[in-house]
Image (cartoon, rainbow, N blue to C red; front, side, top):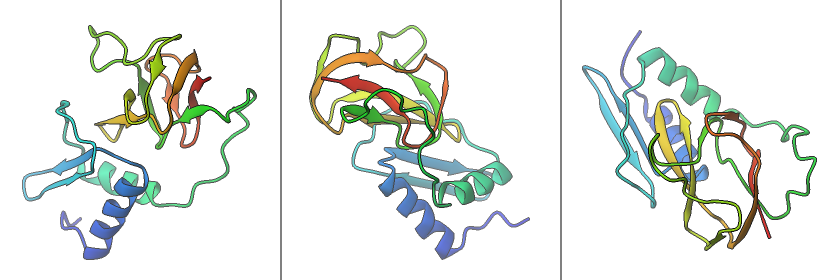
Length: 153
């Protein structure tokens, strides 16, 4: 199996990172080091991914997404949703305070949570401002693309 990326694969990775507002993507092995940075980058620890896992995950990430599952039983009009499939983390580290708490006012662009995907920690900025009224998932829980994470008022 070749460890080289084609131009098309690189273009798809860049497109996927931009569309999903991924702050930074890093792939590294003994022959290749690839880093894609978006507009919101932060210094978070990044763990390299396996070659085959990265290729499979990149292929899965560019597949058209199905409609969001019927998890949106509550009105999601003022929800902040997960931009990617991964694991939800409320804080920047295990011993750190969460980015947001219920009752806290947030502004558009504030980092509100992290989604770990493919061993990359992706900070997710708020796409709207408001007051957090509910956190809909537990720390460490798996989330889907488009799944509501926070409800705002």
